Image (cartoon, rainbow, N blue to C red):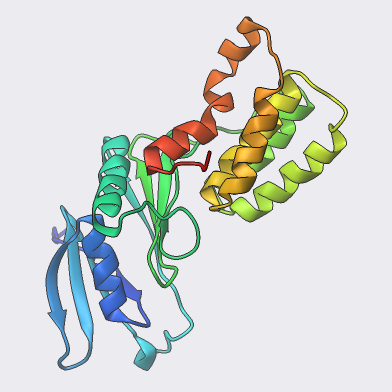
Length: 239
């Protein structure tokens, strides 16, 4: 059988190529071409990844959006590089709406970029093997597994927040580790959604819960998630 050389260049739709170019430039992509003839389009590049963007309305793409998976090694370096470039070029790391970058999934295997027109770039660890199921030790684990799935896979913080709000209402008269984990997850999502006053309120409620040292150490990464996110994105809460 004859051997062929194939390269693939995704074509992603844009309602405004100037805005798309500005976003990918802010991420640190190289602008390879930025043309107005024979129609408005641009090509951007980050290493071996090449993207082309235009309206594509003439092809019926006016209501379309693009999505692609990029398998990479050293996923953390991509994530941090994009975040730092956005912070340096835009003055902030956009975490909600369009455009935005998501935080890494809880297992560290993936994150998503959304450009100004909703096109989604899913960056995944090249060696990632999805688990067959999420094991839950108790009801709190069951709730948080749902939350993390919505947050990480569907990039839907709003739906995840609703689940946590219901769970917090049901545990309003409780304290201890289970309540603390729910508050911590809700505070982290509030930060991601730009609801900083709400995030501060949940963090204060969390601080009022006194945990045994062994319990705190066991869930420390979860309990400090909102602080980690704020530090990574360069977000400060009002005093």
